[in-house]
Length: 403
Image (cartoon, rainbow, N blue to C red; front, side):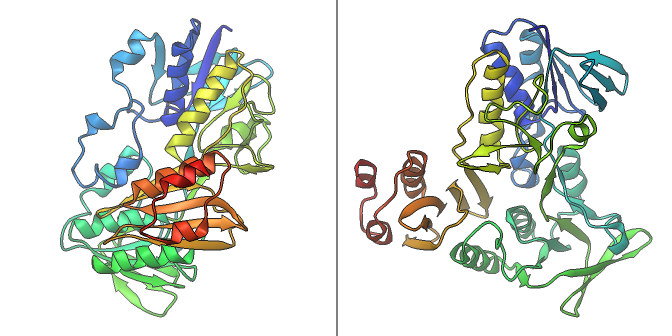
C-alpha cells in the first residue's frame, strides 16, 4: 500500500490515521494540517473553552506521544498548494510529497460577511478554529454589547455563551424564525423562549444592512428594520461551506462537497474523502453531514476501505447542541417531515418527534436523554413509533422498542 497521506488534521483526519494503524496498516502515514495545533475538538471552542471551563490541553484528541508511538508523521502549519493525481504528487509550502493513497479531510470554512458591508472590520468574529476562539475571548466580557448574525445553532450557541459572560446580546435572523432551515416551528419556539429568559433579544425576519466602524474597528450596525445598534463586537454564524478548493483544482468531481461513492472513494480511485467536506449517497439521495459523529464514523470506514475492506458507509445521523443548561440531542434527518408530535416534560425537558406519514424520521430532545435514545434506536433500525404513546408524557417509551 506504500504511503498514505491525509490532508486535513481535524476530527476526521485524526480518526482516519488512528484507524489505519489500529487496523494493521504498517506502511508510511503522513497527516498534514494547516494549523499549528495538533488535532483537537472543535465543539467546545464556542462553549466550554470560550467560557474558560476547559483548558487548551483538554481540547487535543490525542497527545503528541500517540502520533510518535504510532509512527504517524504529523506536518503542522503546512498547506497543500496543489494535487497532481496523474503523478500522485502533492505540492506543499515546503516542497513536494508523493502518495500511493490520498485522503482529503479538509473540513469546511465559515461563511463570512462581505468586506463591502464591514465584514473585514476588527471585532467581527467567526467561530471555527482555535485561533478564532482565542481572538474572540477578550471581547466576550461582561458589560459589552454584541450582535450575533444568524439564528442557526452556531449563532444560538454563541449567544448563550455571550449571555452567560454578561454580554448584552442582540441576535438577528433574516428568515421568519430562528432554526428555520434545520428544525420545526416547535423547536424554534422552545429556543426563542429559552434565550429570551436569559436576556437575549432576538429579531427575526431582520437582516444586517451594514456594519459601522471607526479606525478600522466595528462600532455599530444598521439593520433592515431601520434601527441602528451601538456595538463592541460581532459574531457571524451564517453557516459553513465545504473546503473543496484543492479537490476541485485537481479535477475531482464536486457535488455539495467532494463527491464520493458509498465507500468514501472520490472520482479518482486513489483519492478518498471524509468529514464535512465529503458528500455521499444516503437513502437514495446525496448528502453531506456536518457533525463530529459523522467525521469519526465516515473516516474510520474510509480507513478500512483503503486497506481493502470493501464496506459501504451507512450513516446514522445524530447531532447535539449545548445552550445554557439545556442539552439538545438530535437523531435522524427531518427532511420531508409532515407532522411533529410534542412530548412534554418537566421544566426544560421535552422532545419533538418528526414523522413523514407514519414513519418516524427524526427527534429533537431537550434535556431528555431517555426520549432521545429510544427515538435514535427506532430511527437507526428503520422502525417507527406510536404517535399516541409519544404524545403521552406519562407513557413509558421503552415498549416502543419491542413493537
